[in-house]
Each structure stands twice: as C-alpha cells, then as structure tokens.
Length: 353
Ligand SMILES: Nc1ncnc2c1ncn2[C@@H]1O[C@H](COP(=O)(O)OP(=O)(O)OP(=O)(O)O)[C@@H](O)[C@H]1O
Ligand SMILES: [Mg+2]
Image: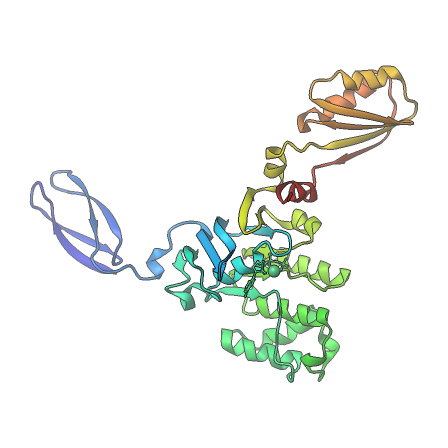
C-alpha cells in the first residue's frame, strides 16, 4: 500500500490517497466536491491484477507446430467455482490448449491469465494454486506410489500426511512396496489424479482424467471432481466421455480442428442448435383421436406411433400440454419417458466434418 498527497486541480486543497501501485483511485475533493481520478504511480504487481471473477481467461490463443495451426485464435473464460468441460474429437487441439494454458508449451499469440495473473510473465505465481493432471501421466518408475506422492507434496509444500489418505482414497492402498513402473495404466491414472488434488488446489486442470479407467475408476474420479467443486475448486476438464461431462459440467466448450466452435451450457447449446426433447408415452389403448390430438398441437414437430407407444418430438415448453392432450383424448397413460437433447447430439452437430 502506497500513500500519496495530491492537489485538487480546482481549489488546490491537498488530499491524501492510498492504494496499490498502478491502482486507479476515484476521488471527490472534500473542499469543492470536484470529482476526479488518480493513478498511484508504479507498476502493477501480479497480485493487484486480480480483477474479476473469471479464474481462467484465455484470449486469442494460437499455437502452431511448424506450419500447422493446432489451435487457432481460441478465447474462453472459466468462472470461479464452475466445472468447465472441454470437448473435441481426437486431434482437435485440447491438449495443445491445456499445455499452452499452463505455459508448458509457448503459444504463438494470445494471453492466458489464471486468477488475473499472466501465465507467461508471472508463471510461478499464476500456477501456484493449480493442480494439473496431464494427458500422459508420468511418475518416477522406481519409486512406490507413496514415495512419489511424498516427493510431489514436498514440491507443492503440501502436508505429507495427505499422501497416505489420497493413496487409500484412490484405491491404491494395497500397492505397498510395488514400484509405479509396475503399475497398470489405470493405477497410474488414479495416482495422477491424487497428485493433481494434492495440496487442495483452488484450480484443477484435468486432461482426459478418465482415460484408461475401469467403470469404478471413472465413478471415483467423477465423485472426486464433484467433491472438489463443493469445496469451491474451479475445474477445467477435457474429456471424451460425453455423458460424464453432461452430468457434471456447468458449461462446455467444443473445439474442432483448432477452432472453438461453441461455448455455453449444454442446454444453451441444444437451444442454439434447435435440438428438442423426445417424449415416449405408452398408453393402454391407441386411437386415431389420441394421435390427432397430439399432432395438431403447435410446437409438436413429429409424432411416431408404434403399437400403443407414441414418440413425440416437441418444444421443451410443450411437454405438459402433450400429456394433457393425450389424457383429454381418452388416453390412459401407462408409462412416460422424456429424453432431453444429449451432449452427444450437440457434439456431433458442432464437429461435423
Ligand atoms: N509436438 C507436436 N508437433 C507437431 N504437431 C503436434 C504436436 N503436438 C500436437 N500436434 C498436432 O496438433 C493437433 C492437436 O493435437 P492435440 O494433442 O492438441 O489434440 P487433442 O484434441 O488433445 O487430441 P486427443 O483427443 O487425441 O488427445 C494434432 O493434429 C496433433 O497432431
Ligand atoms: Mg489430448
């Protein structure tokens, strides 16, 4: 904090101003009520650059390998406390984006800020509270799981007692003296997730964390992600398991051939693509009257009849009216299922060749 004396340009009264170097202070002269602004001299420190609630801000990121542009002018923000899903087909540029976000590879153009801090210029500070799980998880092969985690705990200044708990939590408690070089892919993956959350980071960046995991492992990672979110952790996760992303993510970004083609909630993206829910209704006895009652409703796109079952595609807002129309036309409903547009449909549409 710096204190400066400034003179009111109108009445020349001296005013005391305090703030961080580079901070703009808005003032009202106590003598003549003249309003004005004064910037405290000096360069902004990395800490004073924290300005908004976006935890990760990627702006105009482009990364080329020789003449091939792997990521092309990608911009997005991840808000504090949300889970942001990053989707895209193989080779779309997910890992390249993630590595650039952490400045593990140097982007050609663009800025990346974590908690308002520029990753390129203040890397150490920007990444201080970030847990990262890379696509290809690697450890010291000749050390055990516990020895490896203790090593990283030291680097991260995390309590060493956490290591043993994490090893138990990730189902590696019985690996004992087994060296990580002898671990299966799934076991290494679990240890990779344990390392990412070591030290309770405020931001987690996970590149396909469920790759190579059995169903129990997938659930374990998903539950851990949700547990971290409850604690307030901001999570950026790339995945190809669409149903999983749909279940846990607040928002998703879809990258295709290096270009970010969409960024919204799953619901928002479905709306933009005009994807509609499908209702499947089974009644005890079908009649033309029931079919026609549904078909003539505004907002109903299609009606398919199979025996006593109707498959109806309609606007989301029409669902209740469809049910009411069936009932009013004499249909006795035996079973009812609603299928909302899935992330898979959204993904397929946005990543069409
Ligand atoms: N070191 C490299 N040198 C040259 N090209 C690279 C390099 N790394 C990645 N690429 C290319 O950049 C493109 C994006 O690769 P990236 O690994 O970012 O894709 P991805 O979306 O993570 O794919 P996946 O789902 O398969 O993990 C691909 O065409 C890939 O071949
Ligand atoms: Mg990848």
